[in-house]
Length: 471
Image (cartoon, rainbow, N blue to C red):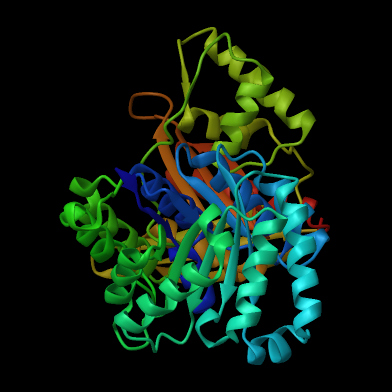
């Protein structure tokens, strides 16, 4: 029995809608959940900001173990090179070439005439096919294009190396039977489609994307774009229908349908949890430890790979320093896990001069008052102060620090643990901040857990200031 490929476009949908609720860490978590669900293809946004987006793509590529990771490129060789450099470490990489094929979109969005568009499609596809065997051509606004041009665009794409061709009903105005007729006509008139996988993407303008997607499968589509969140076909609904009616379609659906509802609910929660503007904590920092383990036989490359899975982009010098610290710790224990590696990276990687130092801090909190933090920092001989109310002393402290630097950094992770026992126990805090798409971790240690948290934040802040030229 043949199978139907479901391609999830949740993260693309959120980016298209301008929804900034999904943090850097949230995107990696969504990717892991989709991979766990056995979604065949996970689509993510392409590169806009070279440094930030390249790190995001590399981090997701490292986190996804089984699914295809698909990233779009622009119609240029430079975009292909830049995107492939970030994606090439994925276990199953795919490059996508979206191109407008309707007259309106070609002229007003791309400012290209039909012949110029065909040339761009051919050149970009050939460049992608040289990088990977999995290349997808996406014909945007296909249902409003001129039939002869659409046929020529598809033939050009297949000849240039496309292995999947997806046609889009971008307006979402076709009824299920109209979309089915459109696809059957394409299959009859474009023989090249018989050599590739035909895909479909439907907008949900008339709340019929699920029905249109199912009709498309019956008409011959073998890859469908869905999303857990967004204005397109529903991942949960379409996967559920395909799994429930396998005998009708003669196709198997590879998703783990037993976990479908629970995992989709988790993804929806991650995507719809807005940042509380009165708190520095984004998406509710989660306490799940990364699933990795290093042992004594692991070399520098293994430690470097584990660091990338955590989201770090270490220099060669820092990789060596982290590896040596891991080896030292492994002399006293059998394995080093994600939390410990985080702490090691915070301690030994990117050691920089202290631009900011803590002069003093005052914290007021109680059962009947809001926590208040007053922090005074020193930078280049100048005293800087910040005062803030928060939901607890650490929340207030981080908000006060944001006021000192007059900038909000995404708080990717926050960890506290005891490193000694007894009444005078030392507490260790690790804080991970994201700036311009790169992770910076800081470590603090003190008998006062609030002060260790402030130390950790300032430690990470100093690394950002140094690397971004603010030191």
